[in-house]
Length: 301
Image (tube, rainbow, N blue to C red; front, side, top):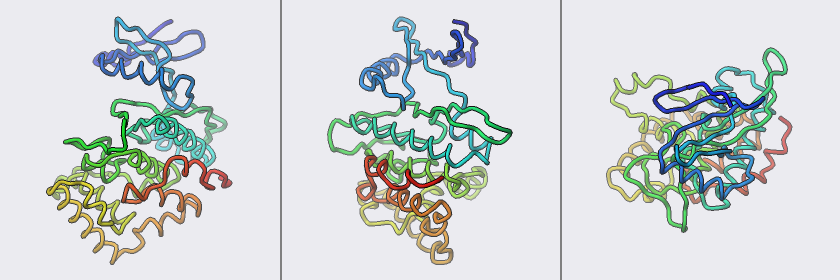
């Protein structure tokens, strides 16, 4: 096996064995042990990016190499074919289904944690050969029906559920919400989701969390009382109530901001499924088994 150092600070190597490429990573002991547990529990699962080899003494994990991520693929190729996007989303859904079936919550479902291999079939076209969900730094085993609460927010600000923004009340439903946002992005609604000018927000005294919450309340509102009560924190409850009021006033002037309106461009079945995934009340969201049996997957791309 030959290797090339990719990032000296992180000890990440690109390695080659025969015709196959791999990523070799030296990881903290805690993550090494977690990876071993996941590999045992999900042995044979092809939808999760698990290590294929390891060195316990060195704390090294060997992962299969993927050419791109969903985020990079769409950014570099806006004309990426719908059937490829749908295939990737199905693979991600199957990965979440595997995790949730054994009571694991990923907590960081986002396009740059979806690893993709594809083959060029023309100047503008890519055929997806495989896609997996990776990056288990935040993964959590839910041993009971209790929700997860932490003193801090969880995951990437642009792909978090409302409860993920607050760090309180997270569950499998939080993965579903993030997956719904990913579906919107992959199907062509990224302009509504991505923050493009952080500096302008800072100048206006607005945090990314405030901006995202207000946007999502505009898109997927009105905000039910259950969302405001689940937090159990006075400061966050006030912040959520403030964002909800701003969203209500904004939508009065711009009703087209509701996802029911602009989501029609994604197709009727996509709209129906994603509405069930992005319900602001976690208890009202579809479960992953309902999602994977939805008619959306049978639609012609």
